[in-house]
Length: 194
Ligand code: GLN
Image (cartoon, rainbow, N blue to C red; front, side):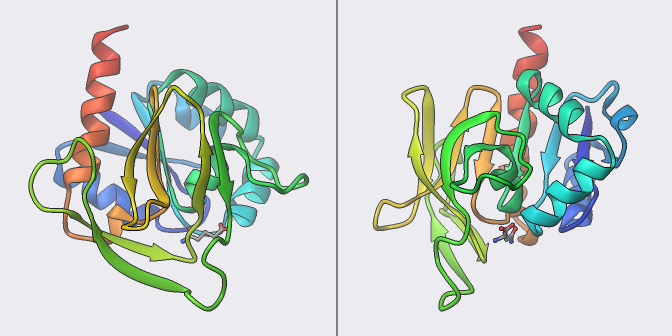
């Protein structure tokens, strides 16, 4: 399986490592033509404003949007912000393909980063060790969106809407490949149904 990893800024190398470990073939995406022939795409964490600016200057916004509308795409942290339809900010370039409302800096500066184990719907075994770094929160979802992970108080941190996956945390910064495997399973299923 050829999985693109948007490689403009942020934690893309860690995603590539995880994908390779699981036997998939990661492809760095920096230009529109790099999207050709990919089975799925991961948009990493980093800084969503920077990712948006760079994607605009490389002519990637439209091609990425078209890709994510049709193919399995997973956004982690800044990647989730980039996928979302509503981030409460008008002039930041985003793809706007996933029907979720995201609060970009929901935890504020006081709680810059934290780690917590959370159960994830669809992942067997122990709760997933989730690493949050200046993380966003999902504040509203549509009826067709599956909330697959929340904090203990119910705040939403992992969602799936059809072929789109979003996590407020960073599974690529752990040694646990289960989340990446979940995404690869989603890609395999979507290939079957084509
Ligand atoms: N708060 C950052 C943003 O707005 C996201 C942080 C991250 O990806 N770790 O893009």
